[in-house]
Length: 486
Image (cartoon, rainbow, N blue to C red; front, side, top):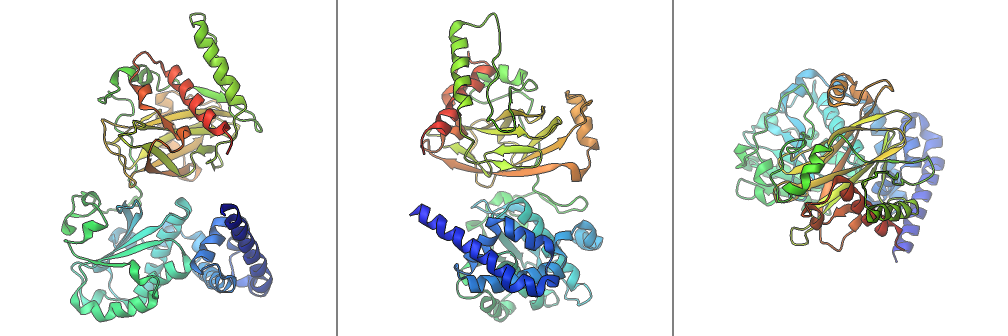
């Protein structure tokens, strides 16, 4: 069944591409941005998102692509940047991304009270909406978003139905599949008639995505930690610009500090070795293989274990989930899987592989720095090498689908040092446009989920384990899973 569905999807994608090229591009090529046309031929997910929104009806999908692509060229969406938006509008704080709902979807805030209906500025405001959505879409390909219409303290001069309709169209036509829901907070009663019109714009299938709330209901969708005080929340966030409001990624709390969790004893060697990561040398065509380490004091059993793991890693398949970036390949590609507290599988693994000819510096940041210990979180990776990063909840805190991790990477000069001082100076000086970024979501699963993404809690309670033991057991677990028949 799954195979048939995949084949049908592939056929629909292929037909959509072929017909769009033949029936639209040949006649309207000047109306489209060539970059969008090229992306349509290469990005299966993008084509599938339009097909999904049009219930896999190719004729309707083609019309939607035509309208969307013409809009993208009219608004120069591919070229939108901070400099495209008037500074006063960015400083106003009426439209921005911040926080997550209870399902882990990003919140897109529209503070209606800051919007004054004005034909002179409406185009700039529409571009600001497009700027944020395009920025988000490039980072979180396909992950839904929740629109927060904050209508508190709103007067009639803030009501602009043309602007509302534009926002609706963004999700109906321009960014299909991205809308999780629209949460409307504290709507004035005088707006009831206007929102009947909004419902007609959404259509019968999307009307259910409208959620009208007050202080009493809004916590059904967003927890207190991401709600401002006027909504009954505890979020201390206050909008300011510059810089752009981003995902609030911060250094993990326990990056290099003392560990106060239940595995304190077994972690001492790991903490001391944060800057001495285990690397796996690879070729362009072969999978990572553990390089053997010679130590005269090692026991025979330890050598046997090394040889056993080395043998297994050489025959491992490629990871099933890999994001292939220009500097690093990152596994898993999208989600970090943590086991439940009951299952005892509370740690997870991120594997970075340097695919460049230079040293790549990397940093790991998280939206919940108080929750996680990440080791290493700030280091470098040699050309053609791989490195394992261990992520563990701190002090028994609960993993949430709202939590995010950001991996930042940038190439270094061959002559650059890679010590803590050199890395700190490097990150201060590296241009923003030279930094690769990739985001990972968190997901909690039971112990039956992929062992290749988890580290058994029993490992952390063995005080006699060294960081090398930890690495070897991780590699063994990952390879046994990846090498098993599927």
